[in-house]
Image (cartoon, rainbow, N blue to C red; front, side, top):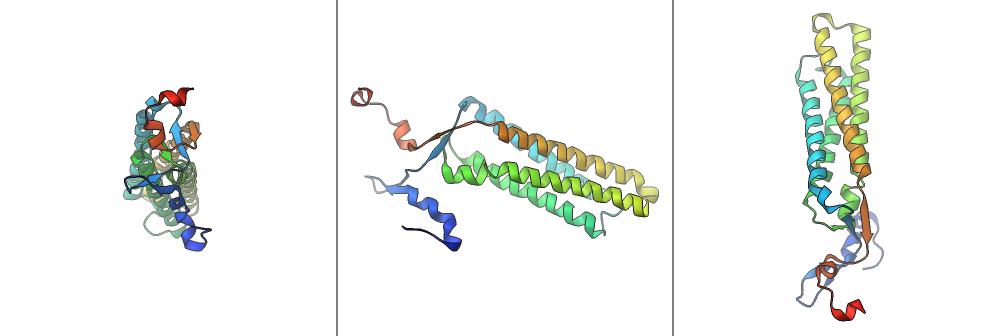
Length: 195
């Protein structure tokens, strides 16, 4: 296909699909296999649990009547960005969860390699949001809603903890890179191959 540039660069993985004898496209590129296949389901379940809980905590923080949450831009921007990063993480995690083992390289790059970044950004925006709440309380006080301000910070801090914990879990996953296709790996080994 040649060298792809510009917006078509993201589709360069299409070069790894070849037509087989049945006339169907078959992936022939690099794959990544879970080093311990039995860890796949528990690892994915744990990542979904942490991400879901973190997103719920962030949403809950935005729903309480904490001072400044409804009208202060320097608090709203990191709050919205943190939720957007949670959504971005959910998209990458769903891509990772939907892929079979072994995982095709382009799916690996768009899910496993992105998740630590998206989790980190979501956590950083949660930290900024908490810091913005502290600044607002110091500058304007909380009045009769000061307890809601502390609850807001507590919920955001718990979400940050879960996101950083999820990032650490993704970084600890181990993969085996292979050049073989899934079809070749599933094919039974012939006696000529053993010699």
